[in-house]
Length: 288
Image 1 (cartoon, helix red, strand yellow):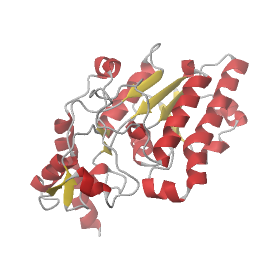
Image 2 (spheres, helix red, strand yellow):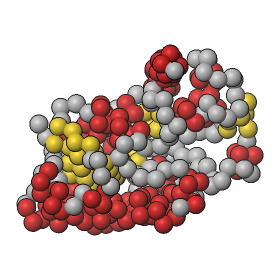
Image 3 (spheres, helix red, strand yellow):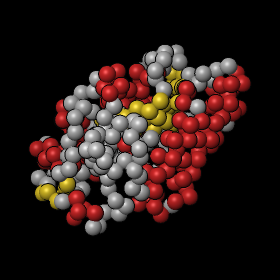
Image 4 (cartoon, one colour):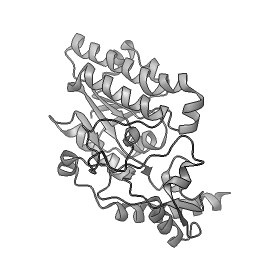
């Protein structure tokens, strides 16, 4: 079985560690910087997946140096070691790096179209800048052995503060502006596909469930499931008066991704995830 090293124990890293099928999974215990050249020689992985990083927007603003180190410097340095290892050992370790669809500020680009993998970036906060800069340096260094994966508003059945469903339970008022969302299910399916492709797996990929929705609509679905009160609409301008850093709206599109992965409609995935999330909440409350 092909050996896969996964870095990060957040929502995406944990889901990949438990959900990827047909691979030998090693979840890296240490810091990304500790995955040294010696460790690469010892592990000899088929691929390394970096799902680590700092994502809380306010925390990132208050801890700029650590954010830059975690989201930008450490992944680029690791990829340098991978490229060197590949050349030295005539190997072909793949590097799958999770970035973010938040590198754009939309919901549409300047021409009124969704953002594609090659759209010029328009970061609105430090977190987005570190992700965009990391993407550029990775792809500039050697695009042959790296895939930059950009999900947006990740959701799942996992009861976690990082889950977008958990976040949208907290606010009585929600904006009704269009956004892309990415289920853990489509992320796992995408990674499994890229790991089995012989060619064409590298480069930049936008990852999302087909179509788009709004935070308000997700709030409605959560209310229909009995998980919250029905939300009321607030305007984006009203949100921007108190939400710091600025929250972005982004609609993603990737023709290659849709052809290869054929993602399911976002509302179908949301309904499935919300039903499973409700069951998970009941289990947690029963244990308590």
